[in-house]
Image 1 (tube, rainbow, N blue to C red):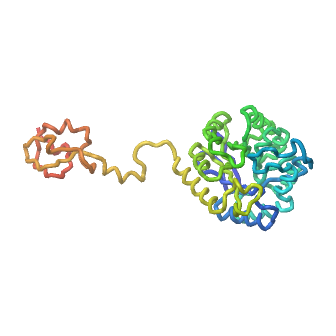
Image 2: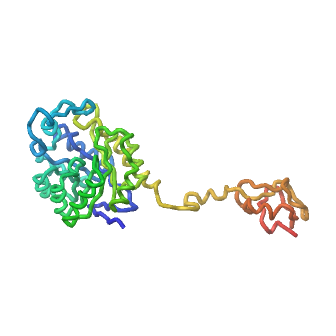
Image 3: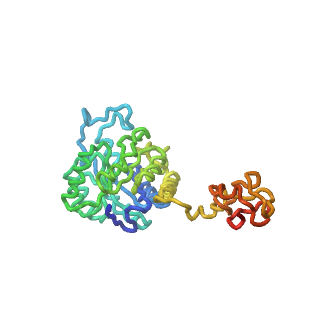
Length: 352
């Protein structure tokens, strides 16, 4: 059995509703007040957890404005920008983290972050997050995974772009530190992600192949993928949250607004309830409907001793008579008593 991952106030385990994570990312637009407003909106929308990203432009890349340090992709939201400039705008100042964590905890959410290097892990450990996230782009950074795993905290690892071997290597890196508390997230690392590239059918395959919990890091513009992922067994859903897409921002194009996030939480929970378990026979909600199945009824008055025929017996609703497949026992038999039209037929109605 896949192990239970215990978090403050929430267990990730088979048979429970998914953990829904609100990703702040760069949607604060370098405003601390906006960052706190996103925390408040996440809580009001029903998020179980709130996630930051912990890095600076200097821990991510070099201040170089040429060659591979420039984004040269006409389809990218960030085409023409340097990596350094982008990360400088997108990063969450480290001095904000403590108050954001405190605010999230006070509102009943689980605060944590994605570290991008050892200095970020060292910093975050002071804030005592109950778990960590490894970003898709860092799944090949095995030293970082080992460093995070060594904290003993559960890991959520996104698998965007990753091959089977790279996923296996990442899990092995965590296990080498004695940490097998891992949730893999199916992820498509394009922003926004087109539905045609999601391949959500991979979710149960990841669970079967690697023997761990699986969820979804969702970069689509709506909630369809998240809901479908739950039907496929996802136990964690991560989605970017912004206050207002029209205000722009580095990640706004693939983020949802508070009302949409609240809908996500409701829909994901409803999808989980709908998925249920393997079941045959009438459910509790269906018990009252059993009476409306077809059964054998007398559809014309029949006198004692008269023969039952296809003219005076039919299978109709409701279901208080003999099952329809007993029609051969009834046709040709004589009535043991007077039987009025509308009487459900039982064996007591049949004579010799």
